Image 1 (cartoon, rainbow over the protein chains, first blue to last red):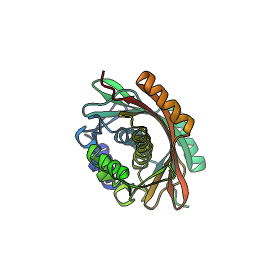
Image 2: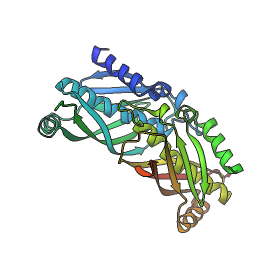
Image 3: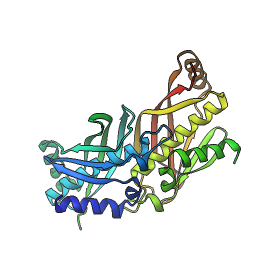
Image 4: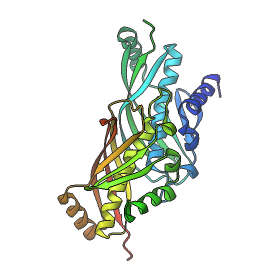
Length: 152
Length: 152
């Protein structure tokens, strides 16, 4: 795992402490796809499958983490906050699970960078999925607001 | 708190153990409105406000709990699973927070009961909100699938 992923893992564990109880860990960031995972055991529900709230937390953070990485690469200090999201719970998850969030398209990143530079704030939509046994068990779309930490 | 609310609290704590780490507790069920709450401390994020995943978990469970109560009142043993949801994060939450989910309309409950009796499975949509300082900080709409635990 490279330094940036270590920093993301530390940021999640330190700044969003509930992620430790959820057992969320950063797995990889290959070809621009960020993967986070969580164990079933801590996130089990009444049906013996993963609690929807835990699935949602993992995808929400996978997209947040993807944006965090994009902004690090752009070297723009910024704050990322979710604005809205839709979640589709397609299959019950009966084992440990992972969320994947792909890097936004280059045109999206260029637009994000330009708007942030011009206005100090920009919105971007990202998709993420939860996989369980190589099948998409949950799909997520979230819109995030990015505000640059610009010192006036 | 009445016996049914105690049973709901025990069900959440026992069957969805992450709710204990989230600090989720059942507050009241007056005039058909179920209120759950959670403390900021366990659910804090990088911005010093409540983590979106925790807010989502609380509203998801408030609607789940509302349906659980409705089905107890109807005396229909059933399993409740979320199908999809949309969440709007309207304001940052900088203190302890509570979610409220109102009882579905009588026509919705009648339809739910009839469909469950006829088909053994029914869908129902519920709304819930997170309040912080008496303002709606998050709004949620979730569709749930209810399956009756009918013994063939």
